[in-house]
Image (cartoon, rainbow, N blue to C red):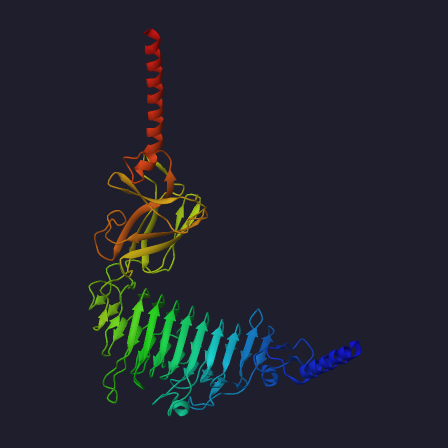
Length: 523
């Protein structure tokens, strides 16, 4: 029996080793490093590594300068540069009138591709499309330089999906195509021929965040940091787009352009960006004789839009842009159609609420013992200052008090995530001084560390010192009782008084018993 068992174990081991030898291993690691021998899994060119890669492999490119021709990503793949970022340059001019075949890197439909931590420098070569995405691509921390062509062409990133009835992308998606998605994070764009990121097609979606696009300034060209068209859908957040100024052509440049000129359904959510020093910060719509109406949808909130020469937001389409809660470069709001002296806005832009200082998702202020940061879960914090508590104070406020306004929040409450200079004990409250009396509000995340949350209610006289709907003014700080003054601040008076009542009752009972005993003795 033991002999049979041994034979079976041997057969299983042989079978296992044979399967390992014949089955490709997904997710293998390859390298591109010219300082090492050109022996797999190391290669001296990126093209050779891509050709040798299997499904879901990871190619790591060592620091250095590399020449790379056109490559097609036909299966799931990751290409990542080591630090410092390797510089990749083309070997030929890449021209095909912006049709398929003009791209430097093509991602095929259905493919998941990640491209990270490299520099793509077109140098003196013509590069009309650096990356053309038909699949699901993540582009992270890539620096795009000198992606240029003749005329008004050249794009750093194009992402096409679904149907594109006209213009760029029609060659591959005019009759429809697979859905596409592109995520662009932490990238930089300089000396780009026309567009940093183009999102186009009825099934094309994008997230573009944390990027910096610097336009080329005045000249015979067009400059758009981001363009969304033909039914594309994009979320654009936390980017900085500058110097896309008016060209010498009949058209204008803009930080962001959204249009359904080549197909309906284009939409963009634009949040937390800085759009400065452009001809137009955000341009919505494209009206031509062949396209008399534009129904693109744009929501643009919590952006810093200033120093744009023609308009902060220009809507020539048919749908009102939600342009509330932006900083327009002036505390009195936008100009022209608007009432203030900031960037101009056109008609069909709702600017009814604006920020009175530049937007930042987190505001920081000096406080006793260090700094404190205030981050609203929604809305914006303005006018944040530290202030000493009024004297005398019945509570201990280790980091003093803070004065601030919360505006542009939805609903009736605003919650703040607050990081203090140091910890506060469990049981800490948020103390406010109103009309000569102290009020104590509960805090969240009350676990004895430096992080707390505070929820304030609009138009609640204890929480809010401003009767204006949508604005909460607060003067308060984290603290705990230092001396009990039950008549001056809101606290559980019964809980405070019970020990004193018990003590007085005990003393009274003692005196009563002593008096009773003395009376019995004298009689």
